[in-house]
Image 1: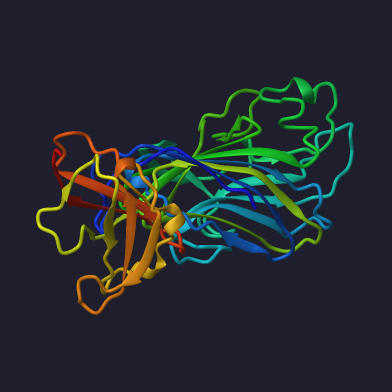
Image 2: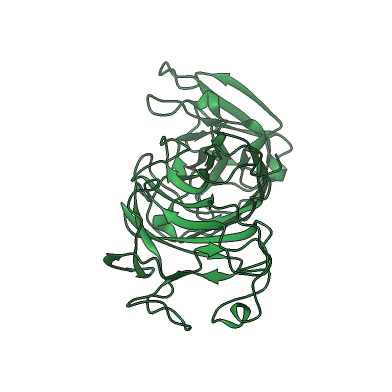
Length: 362
């Protein structure tokens, strides 16, 4: 599975506490996933919606499902630790369903349904008029942007409001999904979606050949907005569902760790013209296991480590990871009083730690 990471974050958070300040967005392309019956999974990165909106986009190919009916695929976000199928009340996702097998290229016969969800098939309603506004729950069987036809329609149906060849009909069971998530507070968010560029809407007082009154329609969801992960899962139906070009743009959740530049030294003096190395320890504790740090993902002041070891550098009984960086590869501006180490752990945490420095001349 390919994973490409673009972007740099510069926000510091305290372990277990929602961070404050402004963060830069990161884009991750997770590549492709194929789902057979009852397959599910998630990506390890943790996303923080309290620091900015999150956009999830992907293409879903449902044409390989063998049997219509309860053939459900779920893709979205859920709170860390929740299940990857029906993470009820602690996430929000798109539920894509191959409901009817009605091949007829000459009339509108909806086969696929896409529904934003937060509790499986329960709570089938929409209640958000914009990212920050939650209203009374509403649902109507007269809707737009929920049902899609895999084949053709007749010449009059093609002229109805919102009909689009290849988007709402003649889809062949393939859909480009974009979901935008927004946190209203620490535990409540809203989500809006487009399917093949089509926004969802609900009619009030009956169907009309016009834009729905509740349009675009979104829905609220709940969970820890600061710690969400991307998940995917499907039920039965046989065959395979393909998810491709899974891409996320948002703010990653960073965990603060303690580091010690030049352990045993005070002050931490560095001569940037020195041909030696600078040791930097990531300290373990009762709340952070330093042995989980992935050395290949570590950087200090723009440099990558030349070597590393595990040892208890401060004698507190917890194992620390000690890195060494070439001094002349460090990019610490003149006059700086601190320097920062960033990295990842093997279980997906993004870490950051800062310690004081004393930049000296020759």
